[in-house]
Image 1 (cartoon, rainbow, N blue to C red):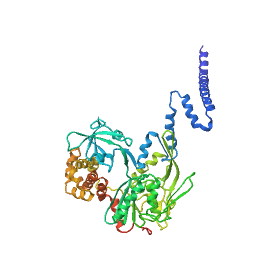
Image 2 (cartoon, rainbow, N blue to C red):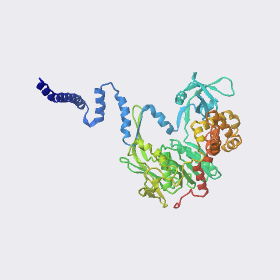
Image 3 (tube, one colour):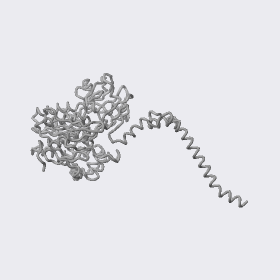
Image 4 (cartoon, one colour):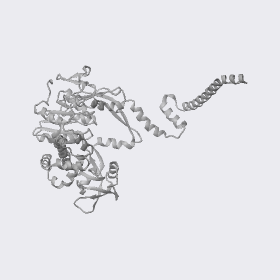
Length: 543
């Protein structure tokens, strides 16, 4: 018996192995059998459809093929480049609305203050202004439903107020000077979205135009702004494209055309299935004789870089700021029958000297978008970019100036981020949003007196005499930020200017904000100095 047990034990592993192998073979044959059925129905030439149908037919749980497709398309595009994207039908209107230059709504700018919808501005000529809604009004009810003090998210408020043109919405409004609620029925209308944030004269000769994006209406907005400033005597222009992430390419090329002589190249595009297309200046531009400085920063991208590159490569003006984002890919949009869309990269764009401004994306989208974080970490917002030392990226303009490719537009004049006046006290009041909150409360409580002024200079002068800093410090202390006289002294000018700028915005919108905040804008102030020296026209070789 002892011998029998030992012999059986010796064969036991072999027996178990045979059983396991047979089991695995059976499993493989079962799977292979199912797979063979799938492949007979779905040919190998359409593997993706075959996989999706195979999953739908054979997966252990019920799945929706449509949902799988919605999740699969973005994954496919992610393996191409960071700017080829799929837009589901439910998101398309939200994504495209800013570029179309209008939306349907009631025509107000609002903020949520103490969980209440407070009207900041009414759109000039819009439906809310026409029926008498005023800045400072609190919208307490929408369609007899209380929306104040109930924790309603901003997007839910927007959803309740917006609607198709011609439809109506009833609102209950609380106005400080009136007891009880005022009831308004507003007929929704087409509301313009402006991409030219502001246009004003800094002094007798220097104009300033800020463009936030390039939408379908941007070129018309720019022309109107430039004509207004020309009529006011503008000889020099600061075109601010900081923070402008791009938009429609033709809006950018049409604006660049206003500064360049006929026949000068603005940009060219080229792709595998898109033959090279050159875009040239073709008309007598509105600003051919205007000295020019273009402002850019790390968030200036795409169409902004087209303008900056065209100005730089044609030696037409100065580019000032920090290296731009580096987005040089052109997308074409395809619509699907369900209302969704695909924006596929079909070409690259190049500046007149042949620079591709697109930064590398070989290591995936996450690293691509983290590039700005890496630039900050390496100190490239504080010192001129090291990319300028790479000889392989050098290009030469017709005037003999060296420009650089490799990812973004390198400015002629580098301006580091402004850290003057930054203290722990300033960071704390900023983190808690106290500067804006104080400015809003102050505007709200003094609206009648401040509304007598219709320009930034008068508002600024009036606010300089109102002892805002002591009042703000008291307000901040009540919100839990301990007074620190040494740090307040260091940050005082920064805080005071921001307070005045936000108060002015609450009274006369951007026409009040930008002229005041410009007092502490180092990039703007440097640009004014450069234009005063006469360095903003056709450039000779820069030293």
